[in-house]
Structure formats: C-alpha cells, structure tokens
Length: 217
Image (tube, rainbow, N blue to C red; front, side, top):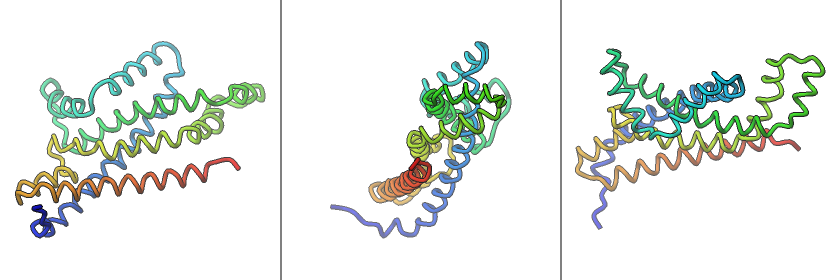
C-alpha cells in the first residue's frame, strides 16, 4: 500500500484557502437562492403571465445540469453579449438561480400545506395580503419545510465542486492543483472528501437544532 502524506502537509494552507472560497460561495449562493426562492414561490401564485414565467425559469434550472448552466453562462453568453463576468460573479449568479429554483418548489409545497382557513380568517378580519404573507404564510411554510431546505443547502455545498471547471480556486480546484504538483492523488482527494463530509455534518447538526427550536411543543 503506497500511502504517504509527507508531500501533502506543506499544501495544507492551500486546502484552507480553498475551503474559505467554498464557504463564501456556498453562503452567498444560499442567501441569494433563498431570497429568489421566496420571490419565485410567491410569484408562482400570481396571475397566468407571471405564473408561466416562474414555471419556465424553474423548469430550466431544475431540468438542466448545473455544470452546463455554469459553462453556458460563463463561456457561452459572453460570445453574444460581450460582457465577460469574473469567476465569482458568474458562479454566484448561476448557483443562486439554481438554488432558488429548487427552493421555490420546496417553499411552494410548504405554502400549500398551510390550512387555507387561517388565510380566509385573516382576510375576514381585514388583515392586508402583505401582512398575511409575511406573518402567517411564510413563517409556517418555512417551519414545515425546514428539513428539505437544509438538505438543499447541503447539496449546494457539495455542488460547489463544479466551479473548478471555470477555474475558480475552491477546495476542489486547489485539490486538483496539489495532486498535479505532487503526483499524489489518493491523499489530497481523501482530505477533500473529509472536508466536504465535515462541512455537511455541521450543516446537518445546525438544521436539526433549528428544526427542534421551531417545533411546536
């Protein structure tokens, strides 16, 4: 068995740099995806034109591979638009849109699970539609689908590994460069798998704590 980490230890700071990029990307994409997901889930409940636009957006990002979306946006669109975004901008836009599409369906299911009697009662009491959405619909929908939302965030962290295709220096990109420099592949990729596993275990723990905190007694 030829396993030797001696050549890998000097590169540990590069793993750390890659992890920071991965965490930044995942966090910003999660925020953007959550905001967009809320907007899409509410937009899907509007009139036909808006509803069909939302459906088309969601179907596109759910029906095509994330890798293709990223390559198309970063390499393909500049050919016809002339705008060449930087690596992080391309990644955040694509990941936020992709995550937002999935989260919108999760939130839509949460909204539909709410007893319509509550909404009708609020209307009968003269509560404005905006207040009903903010104070009645969204809090309950969020609580009902929190496990699914956390699963989406975990998936998002794992999917950040595809950004290496456009050269963004995330942990996966750093791992590939380290493997090429040392001619060692087992050790750096093992370290990277442990990194992703650790990040997702932490996210799962946070999700369970949040679910417990939001649970009704």
